[in-house]
Each structure stands twice: as C-alpha cells, then as structure tokens.
Amino acid sequence: MLVLSLIFILGYSLITLEHKIGVNKAALALLTGVLCWCAYLFIASDSHLVPEQLMHHLGEISGILFFLLGAMTIVELIDAHDGFHIIITSIKTTNKRKLLWIICIITFFLSAVLDNLTTTILMVSLLRKIIPDKSDRWLFLGLVIIAANAGGAWSPIGDVTTTMLWIGGQITSVNIMAKLIIPSIICLLVPLMIASLRLKGDIQTLTKEVPASVISRSHRNIIFFSGIGVLSGVPVFKSITHLPPFMGMLLGLGILWIISEIIHKDKDTEDKDSLSVVYALRKIDTPSILFFLGILVAISALQSAGVLTVFAGFLDKNIGNESLIVMIIGLFSAIVDNVPLVAASMGMYDLSQYPTDHSFWEFLAYCTGTGGSALIIGSAAGVAVMGMEKMDFFWYLKKIAWLALIGFFAGAITFVTFFG
Image 1: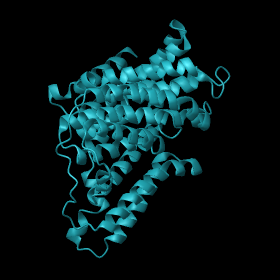
Image 2 (image 1 turned 90 degrees about the horizontal axis):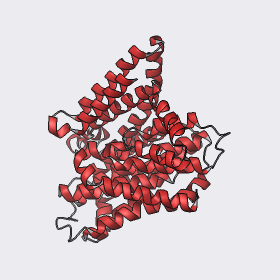
Image 3 (image 1 turned 30 degrees about the vertical axis):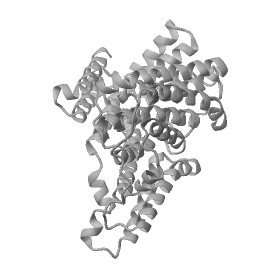
Image 4 (image 1 turned 135 degrees about the vertical axis):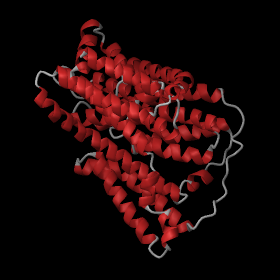
C-alpha cells in the first residue's frame, strides 16, 4: 500500500507542477493511473482478480467520461450556433461586482437542476464570450467552481456523491434539500461577498453585437433551447428509468444531432460542416477527458487496494467525533476524488448505525460536495475548468482556495448549529 500511495502522491505532485516541468497534465495523469494499477497488481493477494476489478471500475469511469463527452459536445454545438448570445444579451450590466453575483447565482441554482459538472462546462463557454480578459475570467470561474459545488450538494441530482447517497437509501430527496439548502447558500454567499468587495470597475470588453454568420435567428434559438432542454432532461430521464446519467446525456446528444441535421439539410456542405455535431466533436478538449480518465483510474486503484478504507478506519478510531470526521473526509476529498471517499464511508457505516436521513449522511453529502472546492483538482467542476481553461493549480491555490475554505467552514458551522 505504501508504494501505491507514494506513486499517487508523486503523480499528483507532478500534475500540480505541470507549468513548471512543461509536461501536459493529461500525460502525467494517464501515467499515474497505469502505474498505480501496476503497483496494486504486485501487492494484491490474488493477482488474477485485479483485471476484473479494473474492468469493474472502468465501467463506472466510462459512464463519467461519456457523460462529459456528451455534455461538452452539446455545449460546443450551442456555441457554434451562437446560442450563448441569447444569455449574453440578457445580461445588461458590465459592472464586475453585479456580474459576479449574477453568474454565481445562476450557477448555484442551475447546478442543482442539471449537475455541477454540466453547469460548469456551460459557464466556462458563457464566460469566454462575456469576459475575454483571462485574469478576470479566471477569478469569475474560481467562484463558479464554488457556486457549482455548493449548488450541487443540496440536490439529489446535483452532485454525484449526493446521488450515490440518495440511490443507496442513506438520504431522501425532500429531506436533503430542506436540510442542506441553507448551509449550501451560506457556503456560496460568504466567499461571494468577500470576492465582490475586492472587485472594482467594469468589464470594458463586453460585446453584444451579433457576430456575422450563416446562422438564422430561428435556428440559433432552436439549437439553444433544444440543448438546454436535453441537458435539463438528463436528471428526469434518470429518475424515470433509473439508468446511469450518461445514458440520458447520450440520448439528448442523439436528439440534438437529429435536430441539427434536419434544420441544416438544405445548406451547402461547406456552410453546414461548421454547424454539425461532427464538427463539435472535433472541437471538444480531448486531452481534458484523458486527464479525467487518468485521475479516476488512479483513484480506483487506491480504492481497490483498500487505502481509502484504511484511512477512514483510522479517522474513526483516533478522532471519534462524528462531525469532525465528516469534515476531515470532506476536506480530504479536495485531494482524492469524493466518489470513492463516499463509497468507502457507505461501506464503513451501515444503515443500522446511521439510519436513513440521519444527520451523519446529510453532513457527509454537504462536506464531500463542497470540500472539493478547496483545490482545483478536488471536484469534477474544478477538473473541467482546469482542462478547458488551462487554469494553473497554484493560481487557484493562491486566489480561490482560501475563499472556498471560508465558505466550507461557514456552511459546516451553520449545519452543525441548526441541523446537526
């Protein structure tokens, strides 16, 4: 286990130093993932079971990757049709403070309906249109990560960890929303107020002119509202069919693909090419998907080797305090993906010890959902921004991490005081 843990720590450290060493983080993540499984193979008591475990985890990982692939393609298709111009023109202010509040509030509630990953992908594309200046845009996106994770934590379909607890029977949908919405709002409001006080001036380069293109207004509206509709329909599809979310995302992509083919069937091939799903697939950031794959593969090796379970047991034995343990698990999710941490917690603590809707499960949903904001690599939303925007790990650590931690503890104190 020690060698496996050291490989992960070394790989993780190199990923954070991507800009210093000049090696793409996707390559480092893939290397780390493969080496972690190689190390686990040598220490496993039955090496023949390792490939089976890998394939089991790969099934779960592929679901996340296909979800990400579908969401990014839909967003690129909307962007190709200038769909985000509809939102841009509805934002009347150029004041940085007001704009930050508008963006974060939209992100917070949208992530509860869609999910934090899809919402973050949408907001990255939107802010690229609104804020061309990279330094300003990165600051906004840092708060978007906090808002997306806070918004996803209180909804049973907003964050994958909350969804896991919901499906597992640890929480119920109405109760989790009632108990976590206030702590989640506090988690966003505190850093948002601090950040907005530090902002001054206007976004001078905000443009609202309609770009010259072959896209008609009706076609732009059809793709935009169809795209938002299929994204919003993913959690509904999951609730009805109980199939994994990526199935709903692929269904939505297929529907939107057919719509785009129909409305552009009379166009010339040259004009139609840049408005097609095929073109959108070529534009998506494939290295960020491979980076995501490498990270998740490495985490799955730690989970299979029992490293996370051992860590959770150590906390339970040496700390004892329920709330403190959950907060530590939440903050640890900024380093290690929150999905296996929640899975390990669900394995350690059964429903006979903590029954459905016990405050332990509710607080676990909050802490693992929002704790990942402390590092850019600690959540799906952060990884998406890092991949799409090439945001620097240490820039986020310096500028955003402290705001995320303040919000995390403010929301945690609120929950323990009033709902714990």
